[in-house]
Amino acid sequence: ASGRTPLMAGNWKMNLDHLQATHLVQKLDWTLRDGKHDFGAVEVAVLPPFTDIRSVQTLIDGDRLELKHGAQDISVHDTGAYTGEISGAFLAKLGCAYVVVGHSERREYHAEGDDVVAAKVQAAYRHGITPIFCVGEGLEVRQAGTHVEHVVAQVRAGLEGLPVEQARSIVVAYEPVWAIGTGEVATPEDAQEVCAAIRTTLAELYSGDVADGIRVLYGGSVKSGNVAAIMAQDDVDGALVGGASIDPAEFSAICRFR
Ligand code: PEP
Image 1: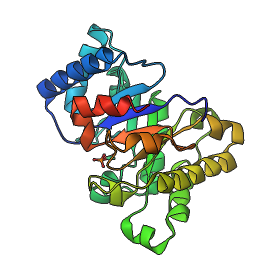
Image 2: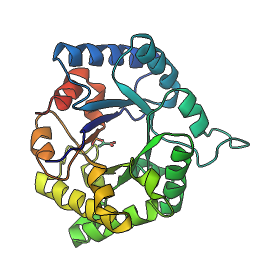
Image 3: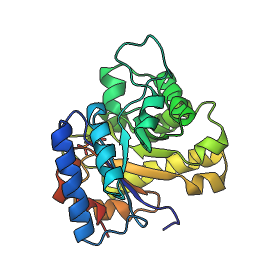
């Protein structure tokens, strides 16, 4: 429906040590190439825990794999006395193309508000890393019917102060919290409604042209059996996949959604 290259990104969450990570990347690459996957037509990225990234980078660079990789979080700071934090400078050195920002699990368990999310979006760009900027409503908001307003407000807040040259390359992921890890998938129409509202908001903040180029992903219990209907929606340009991304057969089937 557009000239946007779909992105399938696998958020492994806190799963797989570095040896398991290496094994999964090898199997995923093998399965995709066996299926003659065109990485130029559908981009595929893995988002392992921090401690796996070096091993994944070595494998991808050493074997010249076409998979991209990224991280699940980034510090708002670039360096200094911030015990336990990981800077964008370190992620850039490890070849990270992407970083997840504003995931609902960070918002909920680490009390990350919109201000922190906006600071992390900017931290990513300071180091040349593309944010996968997550937004999405909880069940109560959905039941109250105010999900579009809620998500639009999150988009506006997270992009606060972000110049157009950077916004052009951002990836936005609509992840309804009630659909994450629950097996409860949004209907394709639900996904389209909110992804379209996100694109309209991007057009208001920047321009129609910029909004047309930005990829908006859906995330929330995406599996090989439901991905095609979701991807058929005009404003859905890929998926952020959690649970199903650590099964190489399932994730490669998701990447082969057509
Ligand atoms: C996620 O964590 O981003 C996600 C979408 O998880 P799941 O696919 O397991 O619902």
